Image 1: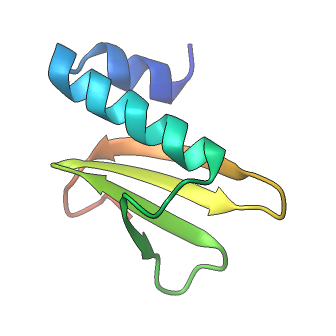
Image 2: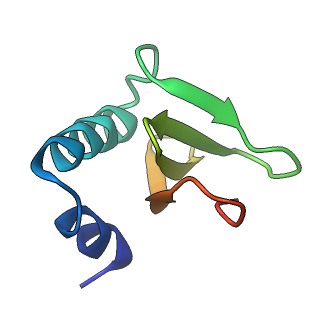
Length: 77
């Protein structure tokens, strides 16, 4: 099982629902309703903030690829 599914499984029901909704929006490219920031020093890498959860993704030409999901912390990026 990959890291993203394992992380979501450990969340509360409400947190898991919000994270899955955000992942769906990122994959579909509908970023206008999300708190998205470009990661400094990284090309085409961004993060979405959902409360204390951070979702990292890379913008490709035709899609967005989710690379990581974890709680906010000193080592998040």
